Length: 191
Image (cartoon, rainbow, N blue to C red; front, side):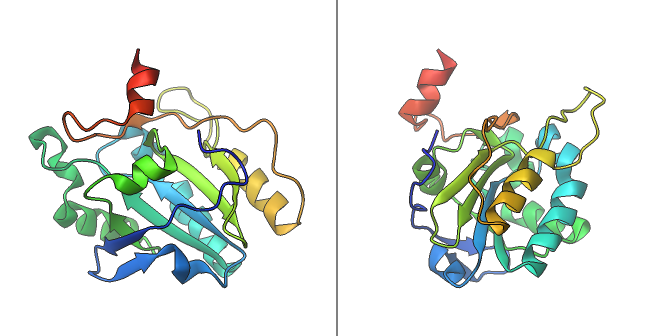
C-alpha cells in the first residue's frame, strides 16, 4: 500500500471527453479523490450510486475528483471496460467527474492500486491522507452503502484533523493487468 503522506504520483491521462487530465489540474483544491473504478466489476456497480452522490458533494466543497479505469479492455472478457463503454456508463450514471483511461496501467502501478474500486484521498498539498474502502458494504453482505469510511476521512481532511486510523483496504475485483505485465506487488499478494 502507498504510505500515508506520500506525494501524489504524477499522472497525465486522457478522459472519455478526449481532454487531458493531470494531477496539476488539482493544485488549487482542498484535496483530490483518485478512484480506481471500472464498468464490469460487481463491487463497483454495488457502490456506484453512493460514489456519484459523494463525488458531487466533494466537488461542491472544492475537492477534486477523478475516476481512473486501468483495466486491460483488450482482453475480450473485459470489453465492457472499453472507452466506448466507459462513455456510455458514465453518461447513464451521470458522472460529473473526469473518467479517464490508464491504458498502459502505469498510473495504477504508481499508486499501487489493487482493485476496483480503490480510493486514494490526497490533501491540499497532494499528500496521501487516506487509502482504502468506501465503506464495509459488499455485494451480498446486506450492509447499506453509506460511504462511511471515506466520509470519515473527508471530514477529517476538511477539519484539518489527523487521518483516520485504522484505514481498511478496499475490496473488489482485481485490476485486470495486461497478461505478463502484472506488477510485483500484485504477484506477491496472489501467492
